[in-house]
Image 1 (cartoon, one colour):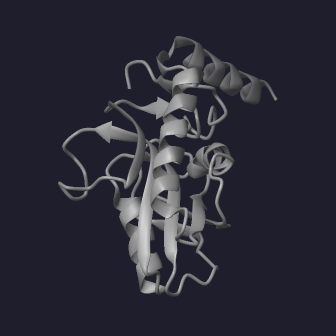
Image 2: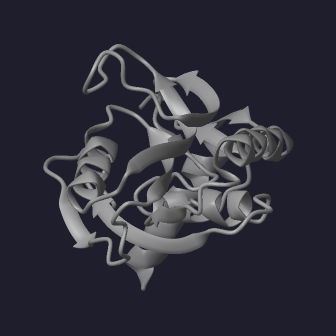
Length: 188
């Protein structure tokens, strides 16, 4: 119990000391812009939308309510990080189980960092027979370490510096996905 309290106090202190990069209102505005772009592109496409657990859950919840056209919703869970701050190989915790054969698929995730996870997901969906795979992320991290030099999401809310980010779906050691806005951890 005492160790749990110390750990939670450290998690709270970390958020209190973090830099707020984007407030909740600016995140909402970015999601509004994404919704308009996605609607213009997919309103007649009959898409299946996959939320990538756990990071894409919050963005998907906010974004899907702004899409006023017919679509199907599903989820998948592929991760390189778990609750750690560094990742290794892709781990599938829940593979997509919807029939994507011949369909347009939209994958929603929290952040495009290096991109290995997003590439693995879209490759897998194409192997399953998706006609078209598109991606939407709240944040694109600005750096030169992308898995491919031209790697971009089809729909991006914000471009942010290469820092350890959390809030609005992104986590710090499994916590603070629920923080309103986007924060950067100090000195990490």
